[in-house]
Length: 335
Image (cartoon, rainbow, N blue to C red):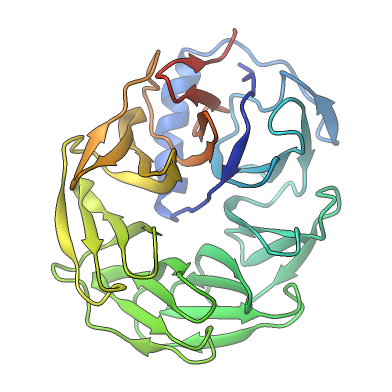
């Protein structure tokens, strides 16, 4: 099964390590009903409608302007530089598994490989250079900020590189817990989220980090999204969604009427949206998260999403990469 791309996504990414495990179940479900896939060369191939294969799992999407990057569980990067009209498929590594990605202010991009590697491209998105690191031993998320590249993960470790991954500085709280998400709300302010409600804050662009008061209830963060330096949202286990109005110091629970976990949060059409389990798309209406209906709903989880001016591009197991229109219409797999 090959997927047709369309639309002009603009920006988003985020991953969690747990999605790699969920992908096994999700891929099996979609593969059971998929038609046999056309064989595609492992070399870079220019394609318009045939891009990813059914055994691939789209684990991360990110975009900047009309350039969109997707990363798969099998080390493939898909690139569109024209908002989705045409795509380039490249197997960067036969051993990589991309779980997160980020664009930087200078137009370069970085892909986080679960095997302790960051792959960077200067902007042509054809040459990807690997950079290994020791800590965290299990990376989870990557962010690009004016202070450089940041990776968070196990051992309560945050690492930072100001030279595109050539060298890394380690910030560790020496606890047996992993950071699962990282967001910068300004040039100076950033928040790292972790297991057991763990929070860490920086007010100087990452030069120093301090532990904050944990989120109550041993909250496990999947993703976080801030609409301004004060207002933010965090998603967690069992469909929990929290809101902060003071930059992450305190959090209150919101109603999630979908009752499903949301693995990705992103802005679309001026409102916070989420993508998650059972093919769920959701948006914030008032102080409630409600389901967004779309044609031929996906049966498995949505592990990645980006927003465009008129569409949402979602990704997941079975080579799924699909454009859902804002008008609740979608352009789906033509096969």
